Each structure stands twice: as structure tokens, then as C-alpha cells.
Image (tube, rainbow, N blue to C red; front, side):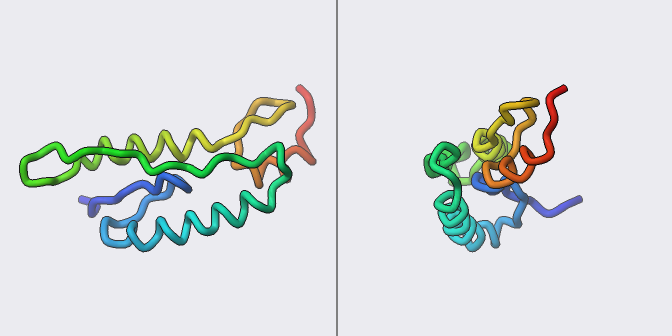
Length: 103
């Protein structure tokens, strides 16, 4: 069995329950840097951390609900290509559109 993992709401990658608190501030700082480098029409508002309340009396979180909410937040940051409709992170869309051809 795999150890429990938490999905980052910014990048959508999985991290261990101990390292997610270290990863998220660094990921958000990287997100801001990359977002500031984008053309104005591709810039996005800062992603907000999903709020999930404890489900048990002991204060434990439902990891599946937390991961689902984080995954949805990460997917909402994707931008569709104007030509083909495929979705990408804004910085990758610029690179992709150079080679995208209408179908």
C-alpha cells in the first residue's frame, strides 16, 4: 500500500503529508514568478487553497475530499488553445501554439 499523498492545489502533483506544507509556499512563489512573465491576456488570478473541514471528531481530514478539491483547482488553471481546444498551463500554451495547426 502506498503512503498517503496530498495533491498540490497549484501544480496538481502528489506530495507526502509531511512535505506538502513545505512544497505549497515554494510552488506558489514559482506560480507568481511564472504568471508575472506571461503576456497580460494569459495572466490568471492567484489560485486559492480549497477549504475542507475536518470530518471526524478527532479533527482528521477526509484525504479523498481534500485531494479531489485540490485536483479540481489545479485543473481550473489550464487554458484552452484557441486553435484546437487542448488545455495547457498558460506558459506551456505559448510554446504549444507555435506548432499547433488547425484540423
